[in-house]
Image 1 (spheres, rainbow, N blue to C red):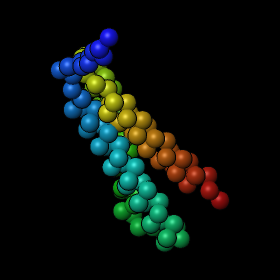
Image 2: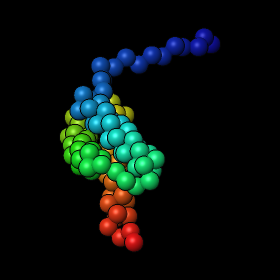
Image 3: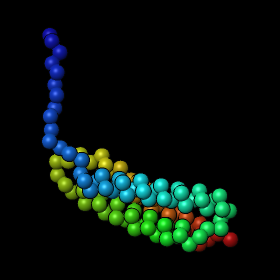
Image 4: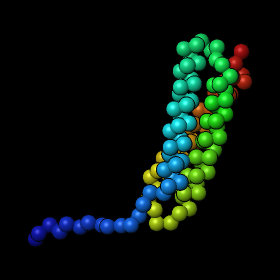
Length: 107
């Protein structure tokens, strides 16, 4: 018996909103990482711009989650970037929540 090569051709594509959600998640996490590292290096004496960056991170993360959820509703698409984007943005929201919680209850 000869081995049959079986290829599956499909017209599926990744969702554009899912890719954008992933990009927003990466930007959010990179911005948070930069702000945390720079705050550590400055021994907690941080300028107001880091707070503004954290606010933008929240906006980007909420937008990324919304784009991920919207892209999940598209039919006959690949959802790798959709799930990755939702995960990264939820992680960014969790990190910013921990930072805000720690800042509110620090002594």
